[in-house]
Amino acid sequence: MITFEKVQPTDIDCMADVKFRAFEPELKRYGISPAEMCSVEWNAWAMEHGDYYKILRDGQIAGGLHLFVFGQDFYNVHELNSIFVLPECQNQGIGSRAIRFIEETYPSARKWRLETPSLSTGNHHFYEKNGFVKVREVADGPVTLFVYYWEY
Image 1: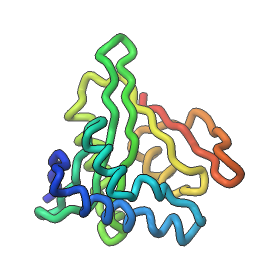
Image 2: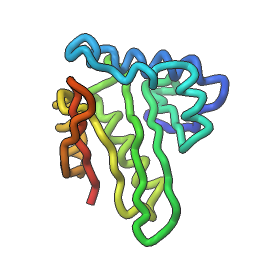
Image 3: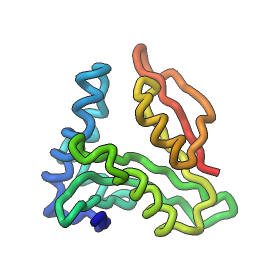
Image 4: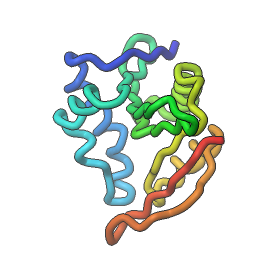
C-alpha cells in the first residue's frame, strides 16, 4: 500500500539518505547528481519551504516529493521541485501514484512545472507518461541541460 505523509523533523536524516540513494544511479551513469539536495541541511530547508512528503510503501519510506505551491491566482502554476524513489522501489507504479496524489491533493492547480536533466531519459519517459509535455531545454553549465515540462 502506498501512502503519503508530510515530512517531520525526525525524518530529515532518513530523507537525505533516501534521496541520495535514489539519485546515486544518475551519478554513476552520467556523473551528475543534485548533490546539494541530498544533504541533511537541504532536506531540513525543504521541510520548512514548500510541501515535503515522504512516500511510504507498506509503512516504510520508499521516496519523497517536494513541491512549491504558489498563490491562488488566475494562473495557479505550481512547481514539482523533486520526486524521488529508491532504486529497489522503482518501476512499481510508485512515482505514478505520487503524481496522482499531487493532482488529488492540489486540484486547483492549473499547471505544474518541473525540470529534469536532459541526460535522464528515463525521467523524460516517466513524466511524459504521466501527462507532462517538454517545452524547452536550457543550458545550465558546461555539462547539464535541463528539460522543462508543463502539465496541461
